[in-house]
Image 1 (cartoon, rainbow, N blue to C red):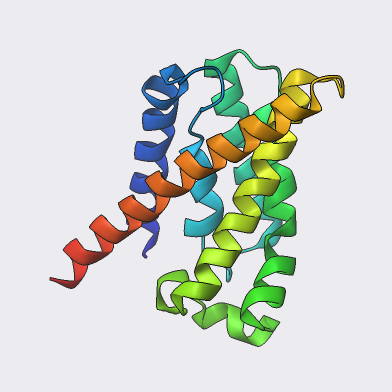
Image 2 (image 1 turned 180 degrees about the horizontal axis):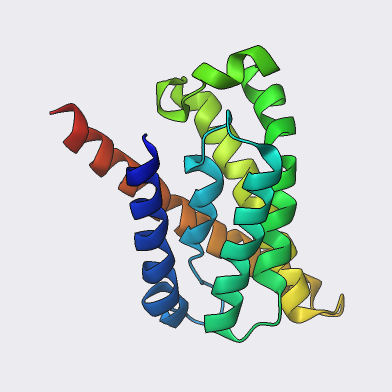
Length: 168
């Protein structure tokens, strides 16, 4: 993915999150947070400081439109920081492999585990900070589970549709 298409996708996902997905709330437990896909779309070969800065500002932008006081920025920054660790764990990649690493060219099982793990960590942190209490731990876990499932369905469906479109 070149720089221009990456910027366009990040803008589209941002506005989709802010104006459409933030207004979805099924039965108090399902909130899709598709903006986490910035973590999966951003290339590994870029400057890590730049990536962490962009992730923080991206989350801060979602916070600004959501009036959530920094919880999106923190949770996205935390997952962005952990991204390389999970690339090493799930894909067995080293720093030399980062230049050629493309998520869509990896086996689906590894991609699935990677995306699911980072999404659940992000959602758990986000929802825990939103509740800011351990008295409702069951609700936090349930909200994390349902929101993660819905976000993952949207992510994998979108990546399948747009990847098929590019291949054909």
